[in-house]
Length: 91
Image 1 (cartoon, helix red, strand yellow):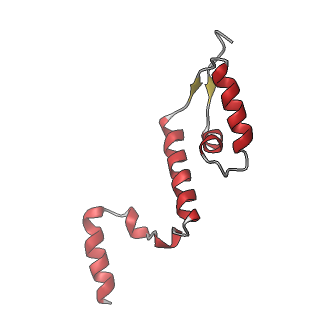
Image 2 (image 1 turned 135 degrees about the vertical axis):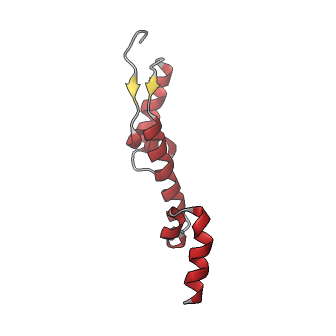
Image 3 (image 1 turned 90 degrees about the horizontal axis):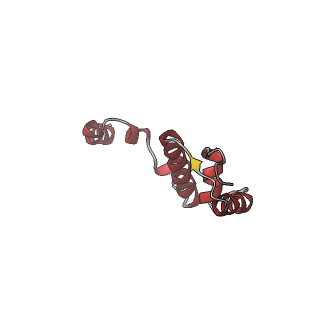
């Protein structure tokens, strides 16, 4: 397969490879093995990696039933999060 075009690895494919309980894991793992042994170059982007990191984190949180622990305040400015929590506890 020398000289073959690089193959773009998108979010769903990467999640399927990385997450053992993904519905497509076995097929993705076999395909990944075939591509790797054939010397095929895989490319992706930082956007795909960021999306995959978020997907894997959400799956981990769901596995431990932790989504309820995530408050929207976590997405706010960390310098004001303490103040928001203090104000919330006053009322």
